[in-house]
Length: 570
Image (cartoon, rainbow, N blue to C red; front, top):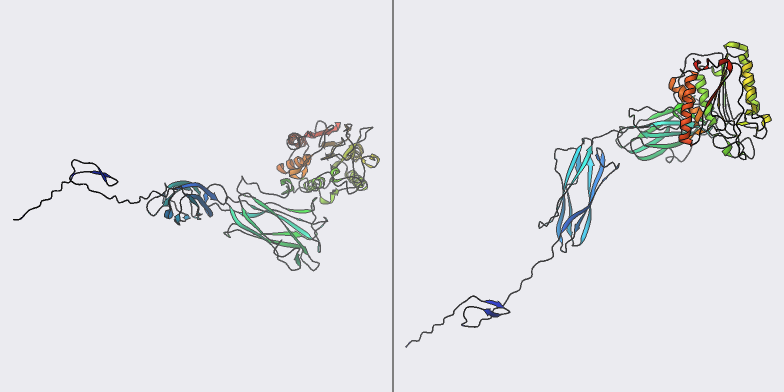
């Protein structure tokens, strides 16, 4: 007999914890379940972009044509996990913009958690770049797709603006003054300026002596070649070049070639400057070369001298009976022991020298009839006053006298009479000075039909920066001179005021506005117009620049009181 054994296993849903059944519908047999544990990845990277900056060469926050720029930023992984095979992708959203070169993909490799890396994206504005806006999209991509949020940056672009590098101004000078001569060291000072609309890169200036028997004074390659770097529009550099022409030199002029270069080799202008042997120097021992005009009105051309010193207007009409004596007394300390340089009259030599050029070129005075004295002694001044008076007396009512003095004036403490002070006369010994009323008298007695006197000096005991006598603390109001004859006197100040400098223009304040009006009008101006212009401008500019009052005055003789304003220099 066969026996059948049937084993029924009833399965039911059960929840197991730690191998034990904790619930179910029925239980036929106790079953033990084994739980298999698996680890879950919880450390992930988290990429962000921070600290973005745009950097350009000329710091105008544009991408300019022909300019190297960059965008710098930090890629930070602020998560705990490693970011794998990180790449920075750069693209332009506006693909129509041309003329830009930039790095399109930068690989960083893996970036550990809680770490960062600085990324620099180079950008080049090419010459064909136009005005517009570059819309950059910067993406930080991770191998598994754990990317950063993208960054968008908009930067304005500027089309190419060409530079224009020139020699804006130049002067030749010597140490001891006088004439340009052989075997005597000469200095050429120049101003290099970018007067163009754009940025000039890698500017180089090289001085070259093109004739034999001219020798550069210095270490070759150090002072004849200057690497100036970049020049922004309007920016300048001032350079000195030292040389001599030996006694073997046979030409009348010495040429100096100034070779200018910039990175594109297209926008720099070479210049050759000439100085003549035997050429007279100006009051500052300089030969002034005029600046070069530009079409950019907002760029002021750099200069080594005042605008009124250049391009002096020329009157072709000559006046053979017009005589001039021009005096510029500046260096009192050299002639008198115990005086310091503060007692000197700053720019007086330059005042006289430039005014003398106006007298010859603009007033039409023959050069032989114009007498320029600088740092003149009593004897020199007196002799020339006597000469001018005698010349005028020989030609009677055809004669005209122009007298100009820049320097120290002083009043007598007792009589208050005004004196002009030669450089070899002290303020304590006015017996050796030149009494102003005696000058007036001598010129009036010459019989000249017109006498014009310009005095850029004060007679109160003060000077342009300091009085001739440092101990003189009380200024004296000078006595008003009574004039006779056909005399008009233009004085720089009135009463107890000082005659002050205009340092920026390297002239006395009074003289600057005197010659400025002559230049602006090309000498076609009446005495009345000249007087009004000087008085108004000196009064205002002295307060503005020197913070001191200076009010020019006109003194005329009774004979011309009703007519002098209509006088002119034609």
